[in-house]
Image 1 (cartoon, rainbow, N blue to C red):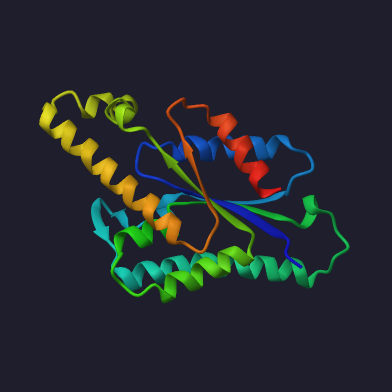
Image 2 (cartoon, rainbow, N blue to C red):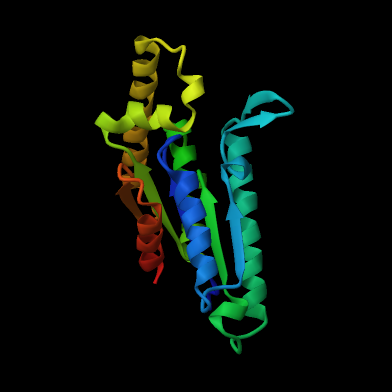
Length: 210
């Protein structure tokens, strides 16, 4: 018997992952019947590029696979403990709800030509743990505005060419994420976040898990 379920938030920077994550946490906290045990891991615990003591370090394929395996193993062990305790408990008292940010699709896009065996094993285990994936996207005509709205000071001295290049990178990565989501074993839905209706998106995702 599984006592666990969760959501994986994927998408390029500025697509709204952090805003949806915050809305999900708030929605979960407001539901008295929901799981009391909540595990929320931001992208800093699963992404490929990390700021390590002020320097950026990019994990290679095997290093990143090990990170993902460790995170999934933690979730599996917690679910096994809940199962070991037996069925005589409510969903709220024993259930586990998790949110992961930048996970398997992040890996697939970074290493598209490598063997899929290991990442598919991870996806299969996530599937058994009740995971569903959402890919957050932004329409092409809104990308430049979205990128600049969060940190406007970083864009003030950028040229039009630099801004356009960043937008093109956004579109390319978003297209690759969409492609990899169609190849993934995990069920994935796509949500366009142009309207920034974070609470509505969170509600849609909770309903997806029911």
